[in-house]
Amino acid sequence: MAVSGDFHGTLVAMLCALAKPFCPPAVQQQGYDTRFIRALRGEDGDSAFVPATSVYSGDDVIVQPQSGGWASAALGDVRGVGVSNVQVQVACAGRAAGGSYSHSAMLVNPLAYALFVDALVHDGPGRLERIDLGAVCGESIAPGLDVNDFLGVEAVSNVIGVLDVLLYGYSNGSEEPQLRDYVHHEESVGL
Image (cartoon, rainbow, N blue to C red; front, side, top):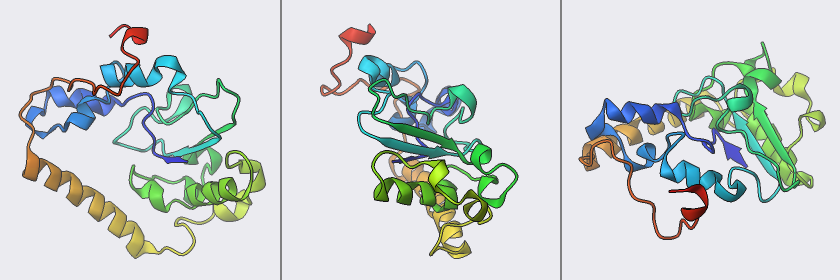
């Protein structure tokens, strides 16, 4: 199960060239054409190995693009294991759960919650057709949570991002870090 996944890289990584000292190595590795993302895509690593549910927001400002056929969170299914890729603005268009959700706010999205519960109680990925979309899409926060939880998720996410830069700083410029030894796809993807 993935929330706001980044399986194909993000355009935000290109900002590293403009903000060198503020760009963590993990972000530098998330560009569409970086060695890391190419290795991930190698040997169909951007396709599910087990039944998978990926839920994401087209309004995510951290991972882009997140809509249409190029959505970074969309997993392939070349192994035929079963995959559900769901953009909340499409599944709940014009309803509360299909509103503007940030990268971290997807953690409190009611459709994400419903799909994950569905995936846990059924074989395979979470499926929209088994969910009462009329009820779920009418909500703005997952069951058991409230607006304070939503605000807390957003605040913690932003504070951690700022502390990361302030405490560690990044002086290696905009160069993508070398891949670790456990990444074994280098030869197969021409790195």
